[in-house]
Image (cartoon, rainbow, N blue to C red; front, side, top):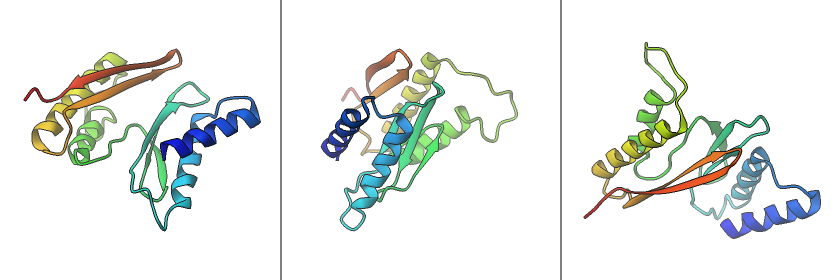
Length: 149
C-alpha cells in the first residue's frame, strides 16, 4: 500500500508541479482503499498532516476506504484504551472545566501516558511508540519505549 501511494504522489507532483495537499492525500488514500474493497489491504490507516489553513489534519480510515477527519485517531488493539482518554483530555468531552489550548510538548506527554496505559493492559500493544509532531516547520520524530522487559 505504501509503495502504491508513493507512486501516486510522485505522479501527482510531476503532473501538477507541486506536492499533494493533505486533504488530497486523504482522498487519494480513501480511493485507493475503496478500489481494493473486494480484496482489501486490511489496513486501518491514520493519515496526518497540515491543511491549507496551517492547522493539523488527522484522518481515520476503515479497511475499505471510508474516512473522516478527526481531532485525533488511534488504530489497533490498544485503540479501546486510547480513544476514551483522548476524548476526555484532548476533545474535552463530558467535562465541566474550561477547555484550554495545550502546547505540543504537553500533548506529547499525554500521548506517552496513554500508550503506557494501553501497553500495561493490552498484550498486543508494542514495545515502543513513534510520536511525530507535525508543524509548518517540519516533522519532529521521537521514539518512546513502552516496555523495558
